Picture 1: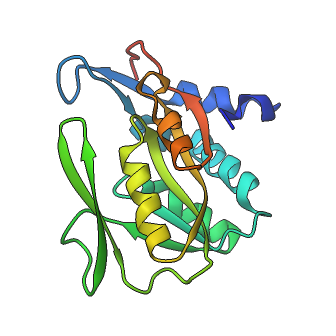
Picture 2: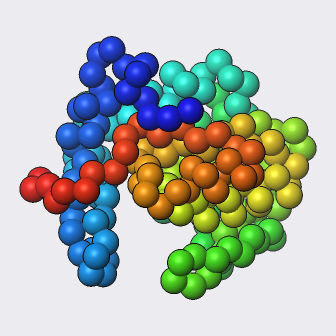
Length: 192
């Protein structure tokens, strides 16, 4: 699976892409930050984003949407509500009350961890992991591991933006998981 362009005769993908903003050298020199905040300020583009994901998953027997902190929390809940699935937040350490399970993972600049409530997943749950962007794929792979350790089957990962040069899609393929994205990253700064 690749970007949504081929399945969008209404031009929603181009509207989403034009609503995104690229900020050069943020949060550090050399990074072309793919900013979704301008998408959120555009009700039509934001709705189109949610609608495209809902259209993809509404008839796929998905029982849970897992959103990765923090921007996965923006897109995941409305998708879950629209398809009749539960929403599970995957959070950074020490943010969830009660008993949690954890998954540590390595990033290009260190390590991190995702946590989820014990009991949030039922054995056999069909899951989609949602985030705003896939770069190297490390966070999505950690989410897959965490959900599958708890008994879910991750059907797919879904992101608004993909940075193809960082090869996250290939890393997900090693996990045997497909990726659905709406747009590829823009390399030029935008002025929004």
